[in-house]
Image 1 (tube, rainbow, N blue to C red):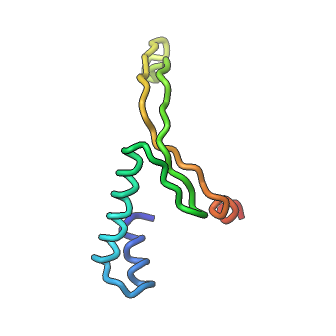
Image 2 (cartoon, rainbow, N blue to C red):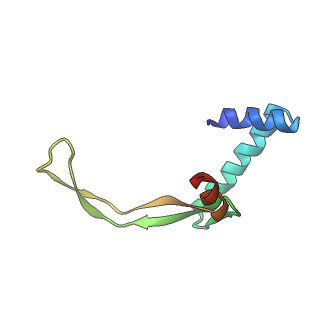
Image 3 (cartoon, rainbow, N blue to C red):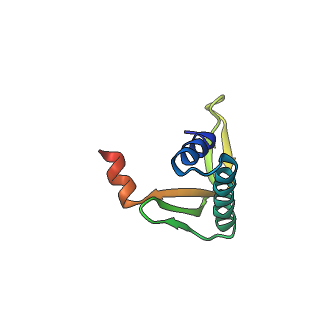
Length: 92
């Protein structure tokens, strides 16, 4: 499902215009990104939690030249932990 599919489906089910639905969805995503950028976790009840964690520096192997080692620097990554309700629904 793409963002466009989501917009169309919500617009059809709510009677709102696609432009209004798109604006709401995009603003929601922007606010989530801003919160993560500030180091805050975003908890959506029954859906899940987005948070930023630091991945430590490590040594990897170049897939094109397996004998060559490469240094992978530390970086911040977004992780998602699914909520209880999502976990139950997806498992069925």
